[in-house]
Length: 412
Ligand SMILES: [Fe+2]
Image 1 (cartoon, rainbow, N blue to C red):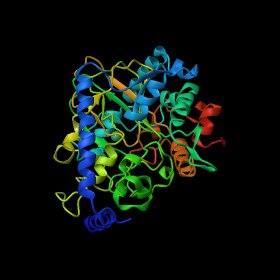
Image 2 (cartoon, rainbow, N blue to C red; image 1 turned 120 degrees about the vertical axis):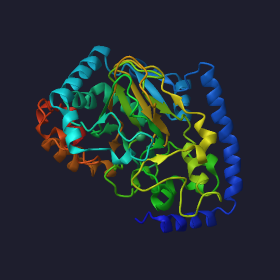
Image 3 (cartoon, protein in one colour; image 1 turned 120 degrees about the horizontal axis):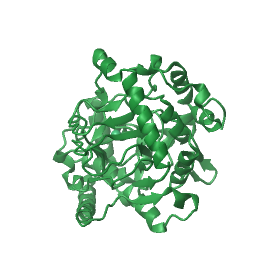
Image 4 (cartoon, rainbow, N blue to C red; image 1 turned 90 degrees about the vertical axis):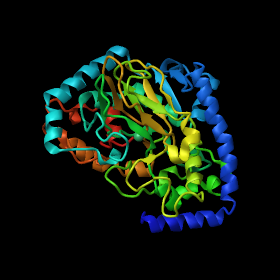
């Protein structure tokens, strides 16, 4: 797939030819979404957390209020509280800090000169996110039954089948070995500008994405359902060492420490319509032909003040969470990390998203399994391979029956 300026210009010309009134359609959309963003900002200022919270116990008891479900669908994000007991999460936190320190991660990272290239054009170039994938706490959290049930419940908020066509199986998830964040109090190096993962220029230039956003590109953007799984498991991304090659119904993390607004934690733009906005924004006449408002192959898709100011005002921090709570957001939801940890303690998380069974995700498992057995970095991330000689790393013996299915050792 070509993703240079000429390819971008050609794709834009084609999209415009199919939507000759792209300016009027966008103006309508901007008017409506700017109002929605402003309302979110006002509600937040009035004390409404915006990001809905659901308790894991309510999920187990099938008692989640319908209003909460509606809020999740509308805002594309949710805090699910109490997925793990506080004591369990705090134990993991201690073990992870020790795993990183006793194996001299920081010294090794400095010696290797590693910088996360994926985020290098974002405001801060050196995240306090560790290339750690196979610690025992991560394995235990991923394969926990409560985690699996949480993800199944979340997956079912998607349209996962239409008639005989099944896009994915909501009740079977795979492990996706993502990293950890351990952010020190006072740290001001990690801030991540508002961005979206899971594809940047490909959303405009590849037909597999055109199908997902067909109603947006045809001008009927109100008909676009961001929860429709049709086409989501068939996307093709521009190959890059830093682009997610599985389909995630949600990105997410599990809190190991208490953290809230100001503690250097996550911010979300709680509008699932933001992606539609970015798609049509890039077609407007003030954007140079070979550009997409800053989108570049192999980089996170950024939202910026120059082109997206109307929506950025809706960016809100996630509400305060406790150890064992989990945060989830739709793959099309813009997110950021606060510039500074002004809190008094670490803000630490294990990144765990939802990766349901489908051919695209199954295809990833053999490569990930090999990396696990060798202690190498997850194949979707930079090949830093820190953990190969780490003491205390998880092995196959640490996998439960659930863990074995999630990692592709046994069939689901
Ligand atoms: Fe991200």
